[in-house]
Length: 184
Image (cartoon, rainbow, N blue to C red; front, side, top):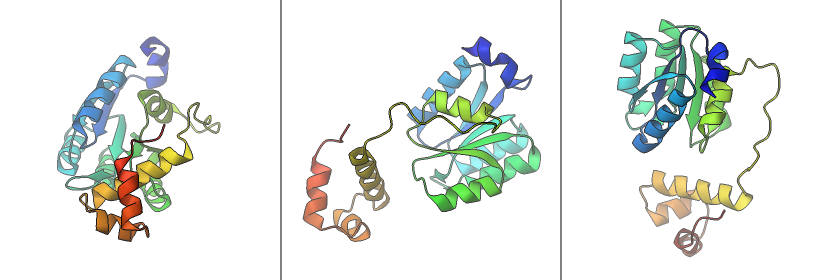
């Protein structure tokens, strides 16, 4: 597949991946390398900004929610140093407001996790001529609900009462949901 993408990538194949989920960013880096990119990884805003300033890449995939801040800071640094950088925002916390903010400061696309390397590659190389194809295996409504509850639960530092309050849900109902396995 890397041979097919070679012409699309251009001469500069550098790619910066900024995500604080270490196993995910390592898997994505390997997958993107197989597709012809030259990936470099960062796991914080500070590290991402430093790498963006020192060696501005041609492509970047930036998570919005990082341990030490907001990925939008990395996007701003990339835009200052390399205005032609093709940036895709990748996040598990998808919201219209953050998507708009990311696009306004220079991201070309916005993907919600879980996104695979094919989705990322397609977003990085798309030139916006056509609408993207709908996903072949979209998450079920039950799975989307479960993922949202898990995200809020983690944001509340696994505090059931606080999570239930924020979700406007009875605490016992939330406990039953959390005790079950994730839906398919």
